[in-house]
Amino acid sequence: MRSALILLAHGSSDAHWRAPFENLAAALADRLSTPLRLAYMELCEPSLGTTVAELEAAGIERAEILPLFFAAGRHLRKDVPGQVAALGEAHPDLALTLLPPVGEHPAFVEALAAVIAEQAGEAS
Image (cartoon, rainbow, N blue to C red; front, top):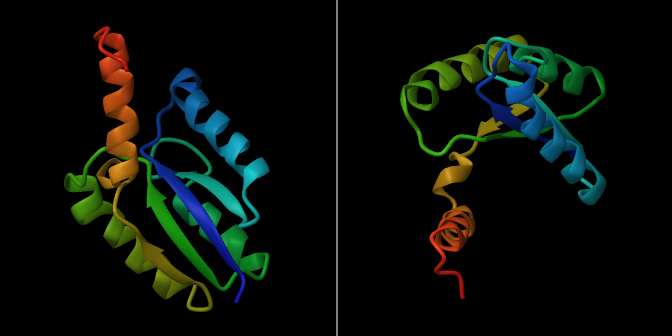
């Protein structure tokens, strides 16, 4: 089964805000064998809908959506699941799975703690 990973960021009309996400996606695309796409929940392109349609057209059968959010607030509890459900109905040949936000992953918490400790002058 052909699968892909979608990195989902909130989105902004400010290109400077988007740059770190675009740089991350570009760096990861070179490291991963799984097709990787960056999408935005709102305010800019590529939207989640645009990305899902492109993946389906490319013959992808399954896509996991990894939110690049610290926590599951309203957007991840209501808005994004609603988008994913609607996209699942519109693209029945592409199975979509919404993963927990990256901020809840233990490795992310450890990496962020290391950065904060370094900034506080307490890095080991």
